[in-house]
Amino acid sequence: MKINQFYIPLLSVILTLSSCKKNNAHAQQVGNDGSVETEKPNSEYQPAFKGQTRIKAVKTNTAYNVEILNKDLGRPWGIINLPDGRFLITDKKGYMNVVSKDGKQITKIEGFPKVDAKGQGGMLDVALDPDFTTNSIIYFSFSEPFGKGNLTSVAKGKLSDDLKSIEEVKVIFRAEPSYDGDKHYGSRLVFDKDGNLFVSTGERSDKVTRVYAQKTDNYLGKIIKITKDGLPAPGKPFVGKQGYKPEIYAYGVRNPQGLAIDPNGNLWDVEMGPRGGDEINLIQPGKNYGWGDVTYGIEYSGAKVGDGITKKEGTEQPVYYWDPVISPSGVTFYTGNVEEWKGNLFIGCLSGEHINRIVMKDNKVIGEERLLADQNERFRDVLDGIDGNLYAVTDSGKLYKVSKK
Image (cartoon, rainbow, N blue to C red; front, side):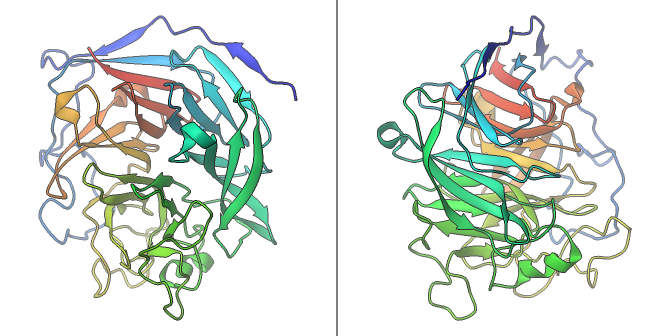
């Protein structure tokens, strides 16, 4: 196969953001309530507890640099590090790229299965096998043409020694039923400390499929936990329970494009709501997160979702929500070189066009900051780099590096 290999010059302009209060070029806007949100909410719903939304704004005190390492990545969706510091970046069109640490060199990986790339579909997330250094296996999620439509699928395969092709590809999980749509695939992948794989799936957006999020005989609108071979993982809450797919770990989610494990081992999802109602959830086994019965958002038409309720017995409240939405996508917990950011949750935001920094204490949100809003970019995924820096990819094809100054 012909491999496309080319070089992109590093952009000469380095954008430097300072914590100096006199520098207003990158000043964060703050609303009358002291939060980062300056717009009115879409609904009149009230939070279930103080601090569940519109928490006080915080501001980074450490000076940091923002660099664009590459501006020609196509349609990136997921980004991870290889053990040597290079990047493995998925492209929605159906393949992946290996990108050098400085962003200048790109090598295309061939051999992936066909994807349905229309709408929100395509080649989506990627994760390394916990034993990647010895087996060269990666896992990836994609919208797979299947049945009379498509679905979120997870496959595994072995990268060649030169990282130019993938071999022995096998689909290990399909989020059935398939549906002829082009939205809400979810698709984030994260391994836990025991080597089991969490997968987030969307409920496919349309009202006819929305109801599946509350049903447990299917895989739509779920957090899934499987082994590296796609089998139900040990310790699952519904194994052997009638009417429940054994791979289900939690349910009642809408479009969870963010999934991450914090330094304490807790699993979090960040998911998109309708008009309002984007959420951060602490995902616990066997719990129901409410969609599409319970939400702080409304329909795009302005109508209520269902009965228009924000609480219901047997469902979990979000730890935090946004109204208006920020359209959260990829997320990561930061462990890098900026001391005041350690343990913070960073969120790539699409319609919000910023990187959201969430400060938490005892699993509660205590502060929020909107970073890189001056870039006017849809941030699709963020990465806590193994070199101690923060990285992000955008829908316009850029690779960002945020480092301590």
